[in-house]
Image (cartoon, rainbow, N blue to C red):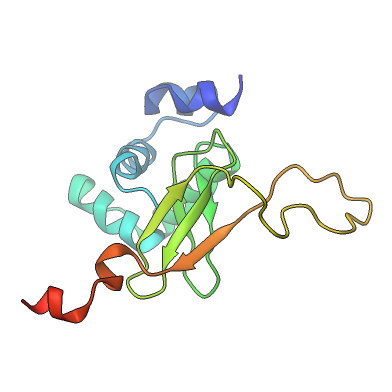
Amino acid sequence: MNTRELGQMEPRKQLQTAGLRVTAPRLAVLDWLATHPHATADQVATGVRERLDSVSTQAIYDVLNACTQAGLLRRIEPAGHPARFERRTADNHHHLVCRNCDRTEDVDCVVGFAPCLEPSNALGFTIDEAEVVFWGLCPDCSAPRASRSG
């Protein structure tokens, strides 16, 4: 089964198909990330604790690691920022990150002539993915101060 098919299943079936035990913390993490993509582990922990009350930080990290290893989650690590997690795993999409507020958004694969998507020398590597992070200011942070204070 490919990751696209796996990603279209409900969380309980995803866990079973991936060979992972179905537990309340795993279900809560997958459910929460469905509506809060690009969340840090701390944000996931806060969201899951609103649903399950008592879940240790270590349990959250264990769930994030197991689900990432199983291909149910994608871990992205924008330079200088904590790792973020998302459920969109079935494609080679990229990300936009705001330098000011850390807002992170998905962007489909780059188009046109983009620099550095193919290395000048692959040194024998078989390249299967390029990770691109676009940095800038989101619309809210790039709006003139006058329009925000008025």
